[in-house]
Length: 213
Length: 67
Image (cartoon, rainbow over all chains, first blue to last red; front, side):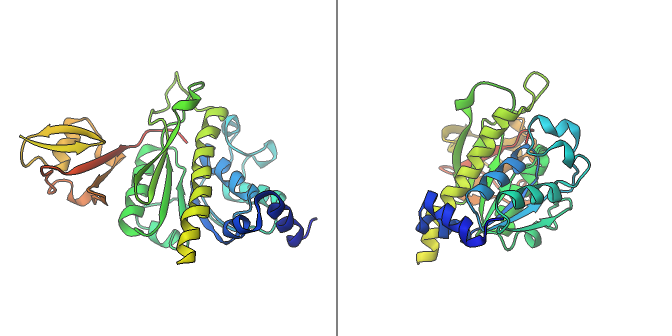
């Protein structure tokens, strides 16, 4: 097993020390660990984001494997635990905290009070709206990145990231999944990539500036 | 009539239109949206009281399924 210093040195070799130190200091929460959240978490783990808070109530199902970052041996396990184990195999020194529960308007403020950045990665539109509204109302200082519309295949370039409010970013094509446009790994991963990439930008450029003040 | 900017487009309104009325007229489900008025999130509990005024800037995010 590589030591913490060896992994840090390897990440610094790739990203540069100044940038890596910002990534290592960041605390990112991911709400929902399906196609979006599992892929966001893996992306952020690979670049060495220091603290990840994973929240989901569900277990890994065989029908998840068409797009979610889990393996056959995870079937039946809680997504929080299955994802935490995977992150440990990429970078065991990332501090991963988990909450295996349903997120509701009444627990959002408590669950996410520690995070610098919150990623909304739910599936159901009412849940997405609940989380976004609750964060913007109750945690106005947080940076929030949300996924909205990533179903089907092709049309890669219709998935976009937009700044909606000063601390709220929306990624996707704003078109719902349906029978003709089901959720599939490649396009869901594009949207997850948009979310993770927005998080990286916010950590490096926004949190970095806050810290320099 | 008054004019306000909704998601970047100038839209004509009857005076005293509330956010709730506007969302319903556009077939938005209120439990699937987030609404920003002049840079501030509008709490859902105020949709029925909050009137859209001339020159307001609204952003309406309508969430869809998939994740």
